[in-house]
Image (cartoon, rainbow, N blue to C red; front, side, top):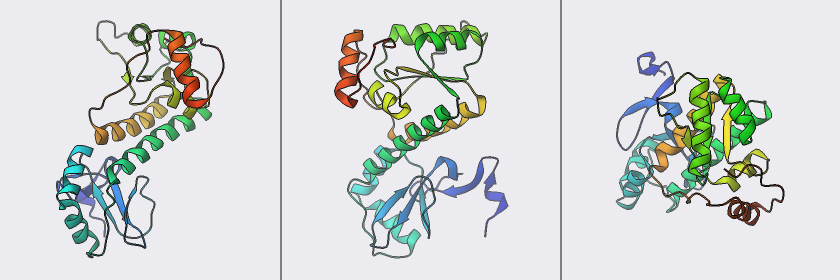
Length: 241
């Protein structure tokens, strides 16, 4: 039975089986037990049956897997020792969190809450319509900086140093997720949508932790070559800042 004292404004709380810390379930990752005894990530928390929750970053999870600590905690949570922890569990979780974030971006784009293209973002930012500014990991610093400056102007935050957020994925993946060509920067123009996107991003980045990202492309042609090689897109190079 749910204990209302363990609920927060963000939803019901759960306990991480590794750290024993409590947190809203929306910020944790659910693990489910498959019929064959395999432990699988259930990022959307929709799988039937008993679940176990973790809230530690990937580096800590990898250690817990290697030392057998995770299997022990799962055996207690699922009340069975007949389970298998995949050696690539951390990778599967990271992949699902990335997919959840990119799916969220795609949904918001279909709803009309996403703006791409340097000129369009600049105009929206200066008029105060941008609630979240995102940059591909290989965006050039000067291009990201110019849009961030426009964003600060539109929000009356000049001098604050706000830069927007650098994503853990390069432009080819971002372009594919949005079904658009040459996506380097993304502006979210609806406040509720910005909250949803930010939540998905925070959840993903909390798990993967500090990570190496591709170096910014030095030229537009270099970026175009990377994009076409990765996703087979052809088109103009209008947005390679």
